[in-house]
Amino acid sequence: MIARAQHALWFIIAALAAVVAGCQADTPPSQSTSNNRPMRIVSMDYCADQFLLKLVDRERILALSKDAQRSFSYMREAAVGLPQVRASAEDVLALKPDLVVRSYGGGPNVKGFLERAGVPVLNVGWANDIASVKRVINEMATSLGEPERGAAVVAEMDARLAAIDLWGAKPSALYMTPAGVTSGPGSLVHEMLIASGLENYQSTRGWRALPLEQLVLQPPDMVAAAFFETKTNHKSGWSPTRHPVARAQLRDTPTTYLEGAWTSCGGWYLLDAIEALAAGKPKS
Image 1 (cartoon, rainbow, N blue to C red):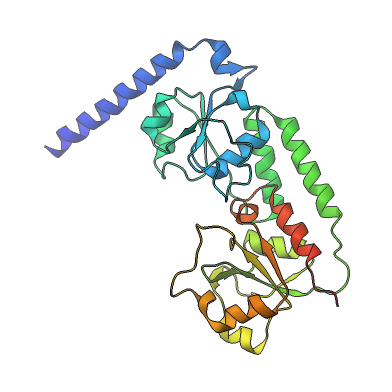
Image 2: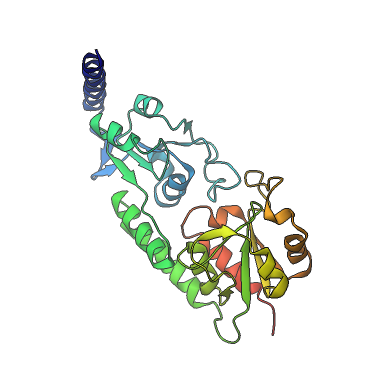
């Protein structure tokens, strides 16, 4: 019985793939590709949205994710007026794209499903340092048929990084979110602090809760507070940021507030956060 049901399921998937492939075959070349570049691109999450909106012309974007205009989407203003699609394989296939771009959208199995249906999928690469951010930008731009645009974005990043003053003392900075977490070495947040000419207050690798006892004994020189302006990362009743020690840090310690969109996905917009932190460094 189970084997028969599995056989029926695979038959349905194969039939769907054949239908989609047939529909794509009927699409005029001028609508599907131009100079080997995808012309009907769909994004399945807001991290992928950023790369499409930055690197390709609007007429090549078939649809963006449902989060494209949310406050944590850096390119939200550029997304105005473009169609949006729910991050499901069925809804995406109905649009007949010639490329799907995603980071996490649709879940872990959607890439295989879409590719079996004849639709190529471009995954946004993982970046945990600034060099990796540049690599991902170049890889995405090349895959989207816009290598020159990617190179220009990276060149601008390099110029902005070179302009940051790294001389003198390096104040310690505590990264803090409304959820009460901070980050140590091994994360893009750590690299952001270092690039700003700061020392990361959190020396333990990875993500963890705010070290409240340590904050009492040895407070940081400044706080890098991210996502406090959004309505999607609010503290719960048990968040460490509700503790008087954490609240005192935000009240009494020099604090630079960072827009959530600057750090929510690894991209060129991380430079906005780096520049803000460098400008907010306490003067010795």
